[in-house]
Image (cartoon, rainbow, N blue to C red; front, side):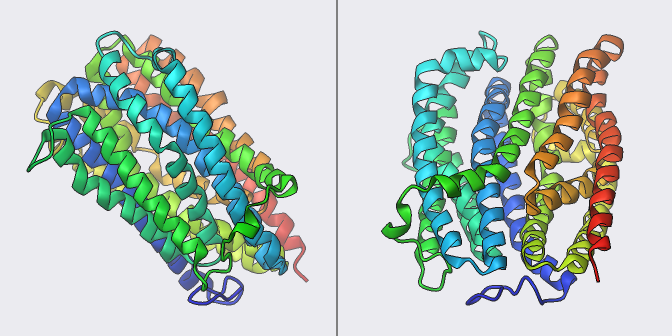
Length: 451
């Protein structure tokens, strides 16, 4: 597939194409991770309670993200397969369904949170000392849900047509607006009012709206293969069904991550706000690496989808092999650096010695199995690209539901707080073995089809 100012997903050399497809997504994901870190940085400066409230709301935001990313993955995978099969009209109509779905899901999310906000927060582990701050943050940030859904879905569509640079620009816009605006609204710099945690939520909504508007602009360009117009906004149940055949398992996978965060919050509630703040820092620093790995996965997915649609089985297998090697090497180097410099990295966020004493060993345990997460992400995106979202979902469930969640309940009984941090790497090792077995079988099936 060659598009105007796009990439040829079927002919370009694999490593070069992987880099071209991945680096914009990596840059975008890294920008998101940095934005999340800076979010934590400013709120940690505000108070430990504000950071704990942000950490408490994090799984709720992940819940929003699960819906947006999952739907976007389904839409992107379907559009890429349609491009590969030469069915351009169906790919264009997919963009219209994304627009309609983001509006409908956004309105539903806003109403749900405004009606049930306290029940939601308590269900996610809020204690009475953190609830007021968490409520202030949640009831404002939810108004960004329609924008968040659309930009996440549109991002996948842009990658599906071979234009990862445009996808990168969308996310960079979000990160740039958030990074610049947040401290002014949180601390009342210049002529802005001092809004505290409310300012952090307002900055997030503004940044989401700005990047959603840019996404809409890109989909309407004459140079886009989608060229989104009113004609494509007519609801199509068949396309929505195709989107969620792949997307719903992806939604479920991301929902499980949110559930895991809720369980983390409940388990850590017995250890106090300091443990909750530690979790927030560990997840965000760990996210610097995993976001990049997900960027590689995002680059792999449309390449696999196109190769599957075009029947290029050798190219599909070679794409996965190259991506696994590159991502594993990066994860290994990153792990060594984080192990060596855990304390100075954490000290940049807080000077609280008690927090540092808790967070340093926690971070080292968190990142100890990163090198195994890297190929797992590539393989799961391979299954999504193949349209086998259910397989990808089951593999994620095996890690989070079968392994991680039970460990979060069992290990703290024997090892206390250390057991909470141990659950992450131990479940990663066992899940890697399962994902490896299933993925090798899938790749052998494709090798057998090569004539």
